[in-house]
Picture (cartoon, rainbow, N blue to C red):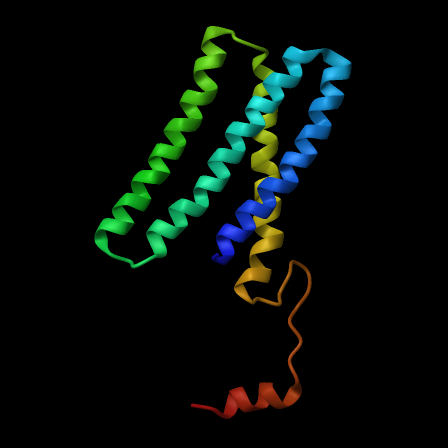
Length: 147
């Protein structure tokens, strides 16, 4: 399993647990329709996030013109899915829209945090925001001498 799939699936598991706890609190405070709307928004957000791993696999795997084209098409399809999956229930007034969009937006905020904090670890980078990579003095001198 590639690094981006591991990141996506681990993230989805953590967000699912956090969303279940939040949905239980929403159920107690506002009722079941608000909790289901929140859960639906979170679910759509998670599907969109995990499908990002598919897009990355298609674009980077094999690097053929067909793979890149299918990867680009999957990006457009993901955005269309999100618009339809959120827009149709909102238009039909099936449940509270604001809480549904809050669940979806919450996933995207958490996604950005997960990508910023999780990706450097997978890519082998040591740098994290506000912390510089430490190198031995010998290595720095060696790098300057090499041509």
